[in-house]
Length: 175
Image (cartoon, one colour):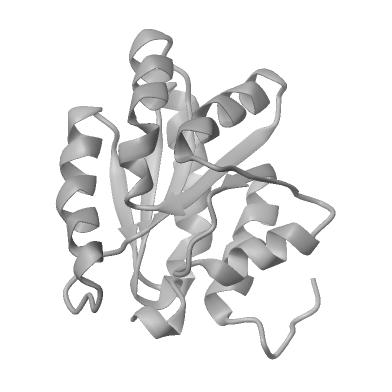
């Protein structure tokens, strides 16, 4: 991918990480904190980009890709875990199927939107209730190793893994 001056560093780092990790399918409900990633996925022929109307659709897409021998990634705002809760629970608790999800972390200290605060308040308790391990990714240099480790962890544990992007890893307007 050519380096475009208008493409933010977080989006370039994320795309490089997905390609190096072997991600072939990205399913997402686009939101503003990772918006440039969605634009890049849409334009990149190496990645099959599947936008959805609800986060509840994403776990099935990722598990279907897993059964087909492909690496898939779901990307959403952290509020999406509330929508995706039932299919994630069904596929992980009943069938021990791996999934990797990346969430932008809306609602951290300094959140400007009143509606964003509950996203942070509910994300961690829901991930804990589903027994999904999660890590925060704050630095650009951590995107690639954390994404690689997330796929290794999900495959070896046969369980979902979540990464919450914040800091340098989201659009500058939300830092």
